Image (cartoon, rainbow, N blue to C red; front, side, top):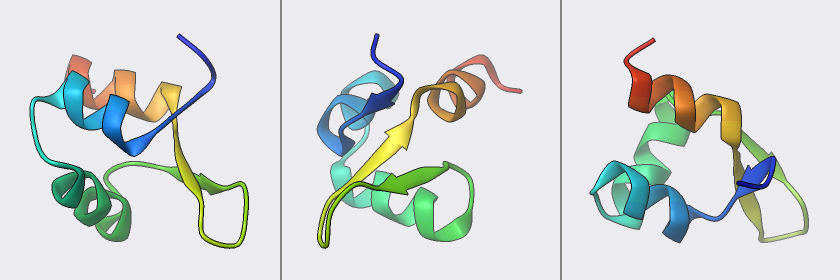
Length: 54
């Protein structure tokens, strides 16, 4: 898995919607990186931590 993942991939891994992923990022539950004026990607380590329950 790449170091940064899309919101769609993240939502698939978490079995939720992309809106939920956006909410998790706003709440600070997932860490995201801005890679363009309108593009965000979720850090892989943050996703794995959420999946693992850490």
